[in-house]
Length: 619
Image (cartoon, rainbow, N blue to C red; front, top):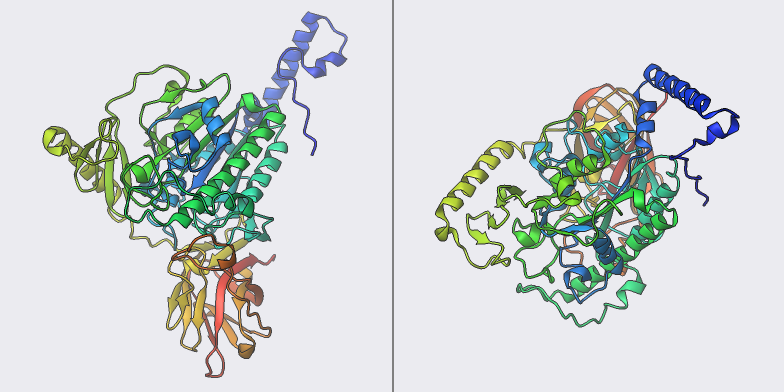
């Protein structure tokens, strides 16, 4: 693929070379044309001016991995794997020794995107709508987009599926990936591209990296903001053979200390998946080098929570889901050649909430509108030698468990105090030795919890359908409620489907908000054995209903096990569901309950349902 020739940004503009004029005339002509340019900008809105202002600003690439712990890097001393590309990134840039994220996926993403603690944005769960980021929150991508940047996200979103919760409604010009918390298959799975369902190509991490590289190549003429949220090593533990073969029978030199650290196959698979990530990070950065844009590109690498099983993590207490150090400490490497010092280690505590103010500050992108930030800019710490502040507090929360970190101490969710300098493994409670500090931190936790947590899980937000700016809406089984005999295909809702739908009284419901009324063509992705062809589907919103007879069997097997390297636990396998056109549903704007049911002349049926696609019909 060819790339655009770099623009002349210094010295004589190329357009002046065509004029045989003196230096004075040249300067006068340039002044007149520049004046005309700003007059045009004033006349035709801020978009042109923003694009011009963005020209000299750095590109930004943010790589976020899923369920990779601090210890899953050879850079941090883990001899069980080799991550040369990520290690090299750490060496080329600066690194934060103590960087904190959330115990689980969607809260970390929300804090990175907004610069605010996740409860402020309404994020309280990882599925069934609780992962959605409130619409009054302004994201990092929106700030960069408003400043004239091209923006894209490729990977796992996990902060809302239906527009305007969708990435396209949160500042991203381009999105390719999936919006759920986990996915059931990593080899050529069903994905989406800007809301439309598509088929992925190859292993999912390779695929997302391919799209990221294509985006970079196509963005040579305009600064870009690229968000690459890798979906691994989150389960299912699937990885190409080339990576698995080197770990399958591996004797692990470093293990977790906890009693259930013997799920060695899971650990081996996670290590293989991280090595696959590392290869793709290398591919991406190599392309940045080949395009000669590395010096003007900020690259950030971090993870979304602690490791997803008890594997080696530097001896820290806690894993994914925990508010202890091991559950929330993440690597954080940031590279900007000739601007950010190489090899610098920053001892200042920091967190995902700091990335929005830091990246906008480094790129000189205005933060316009939105709520007050919890995060602070780390620019001075990165570019200069700044004293480490000793009074900062960073809070970690999940499932009403709150801990707080100072520069030296952590108060855990049970009120125990640990000196993290002398006891990074959190083994000795020193609360009685520091009663005043302990009491102060307990009061800080009480105040923080009292401000942010009341009513957090009282979530009554319906799922939006039919936004006028987005033609298609996905409504998956994940977001619905089963009734009667209907049940989910697995306990974890994210990639599940409804099954055991076998009686006339069975139904599924979704709380929805039709943002703009109209006529919608509705497809249902379904499975049906041959014996149940003829079942009648009914979909109603209030008194408005459509019915459709299932006239074609689709009875695929559940798949995924053949690619799993370890047990996937509570997560669903997947099927090749087919779309069934239910017809056109004409519905008014407003909230209501969408109900799906079926009958088969009183006989049992065995229908299964994965998702709806609502598409607005042109008037």
